[in-house]
Amino acid sequence: MRILGIDPGLRITGFGVIDKSGSNLTYVSSGSVKTLAGELPSRLKLILSNLSEVIAQYQPEHVAIEQVFVNINPKTTLLLGQARGAAICAAVMNDLMVSEYTALQIKQAVVGNGHAKKNQVQEMVVRLLRLTGSPSADAADALACAICHAHGGLGLGRIATTGYRMKRGRLV
Image (tube, rainbow, N blue to C red; front, side, top):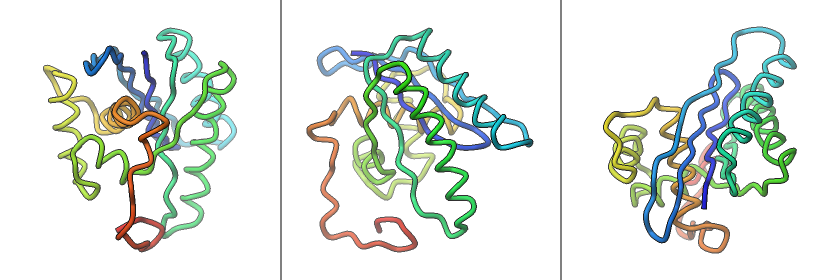
């Protein structure tokens, strides 16, 4: 099974592709789509077209994307949501189903701690995929999203959040 993980962002959208065979995970590719400052529609088009190229090149069977959390700044949250929408459109235009995971679920699946720091996630991605180098932060987050999907999939992907509370739109 080939999985494309996406870490959406308007400035930098990370992507990571892994293969899952049984319980083995294999790194295929990762990178990021960087948009320059400019008009929003052209930036969204760049995300959509570049992720469509990634999908065409690597032919994933599943797509996993990080859910948007509510930010302190509503404008930033809306812009992130639009970038995420462009990424989802790239998947559905290619007839792929999209699974969504919160940052808490991704960290729990990869590190074993839903409150892990970014560098801990990055280090576990390197270990789980037996990488010789460390991917960029955005690519590592996308690979972590793909790993989360590989570990849980549609059935187990909903990691229990009982006992947590919401603070500024995040589970804590």
